[in-house]
Figure 1: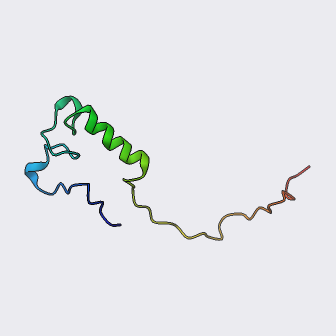
Figure 2 (figure 1 turned 90 degrees about the horizontal axis):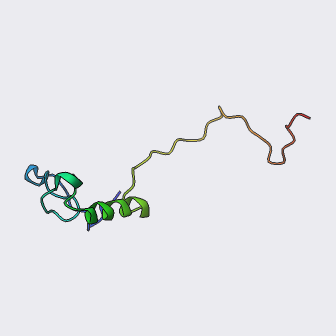
Figure 3 (figure 1 turned 90 degrees about the vertical axis):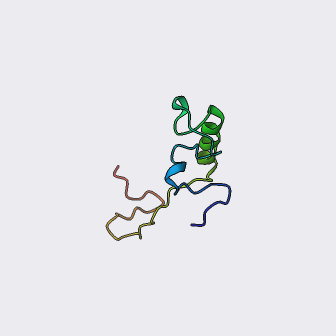
Length: 76
């Protein structure tokens, strides 16, 4: 998955106490962010899909029962 250019890399140990959004020093109250605004920006990125957790799709197996789409298997 390509990295979004507006999201900085945090590999430098000196930057670990920096806000991941803007790079300013993190405030204890909003940790790991520096402000409520940066925390909200991060939350918006999750909600909008900018951030995503990679998932490996599983192949469909034959271990699941097949249900006819018309519902003929319903006991009456």
